[in-house]
Length: 553
Image (cartoon, rainbow, N blue to C red):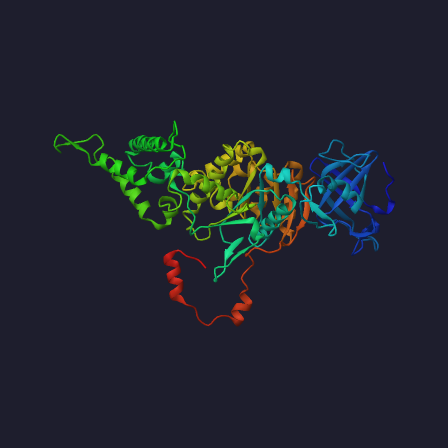
């Protein structure tokens, strides 16, 4: 092992546990600004989020400093300063040849020396990922050192970006996508944009984007079509049938029979030999309604005897008619472009970036979609991407990542409820998608409200500032026991600063995410300026018209 400079010794171990260590800082570094110089760089001793190495004999354990404090029970006899202690979490071992490995096999004992870590030692740990050139920011403890994550681990095994409102989630999402587009020019992503932050149109109709325009396929929700005939039979049941209705079972059986027959008729037209009730071919919703109406009004023997299904479908017909008359469902029930089986290929091309212009990222702007309909749209987009690659023979050469903004809004933790269908679709992707080249990135400000199944499938976490105790505790439960105390750092992070945990980084890493260029449209409203020099009047009539037409500018 190489000789270690004595002046980098900053503390001695006083306590060792499997999930943490405590060390007393040497008297030399107990002044107000304890700096140690290493690798031509001044490092603040005990800085939270920085690294240290505990050395004892042939043992070298890398640890992350999580807190620093003084001995509250210290009673000085002279001018002696109160002893200071640092608390650390071990993250891995450094071998004698300088190589790094996760986990701890050999623990040091109290009395071992704690040494400051310089940029050269840091580079030995992070250099294994630098070849990817997927740089997302710089180390908070070493601002001159850019951090590259492992994109294979991040995108192929699902990831989560969590943090409270204002912590920089949109900033982080944009920066990561921009970095991915630079490092991987053939990347394929679909982003569910719930607030119109990543692509938007100005009042003049000009499209603005947080990504290079030639790499983006913008899907405007005012023109979005996710035709009903692409829905699975189970989703159609959820849409049209009230399971609490006493005749619900009969409605389900009859709807299966009618849809099966309608799809067989379509299959014959397009030369398809066999179909199932879930085969994505066109069928007429009007014909489905007419079949139910006819059975519901059927009479025999010159109109004197009621048919077996007479009056059984009243609730179904009312529910179906109400859905059809609701303009919010027009994107689903009244397709204008995708109203033939042949239109499926063009719809798929649009969503995976293989249209007239080949693009890397599809941004589905859901900001104009009413809140109670967004889950249905999100589920349809997710299932479309999953089914596309499930049947794609070249799925391994064409992986796709689905990024779900505000995921807690439609992939909830609670069981049952109106979002259960969406939740099942997304959880299926989380559990099975990796086999077929489909991964998910979930973004949420409330991890406690997000599906546990979804989070349990994530192998990497980018955690921004989180001060809510419940969310901190929940994040802590998601981490390995030895790293649980890292959640205590979350409340002290600045905007755009994150703690990266999991397989995408070699060790738990505190990083300042690069400011995206261009930035998303997510900056806080400037209350001070607009309240000081703001508008005197508004066109309220225009606001009413936009509200009634469900149109946002």
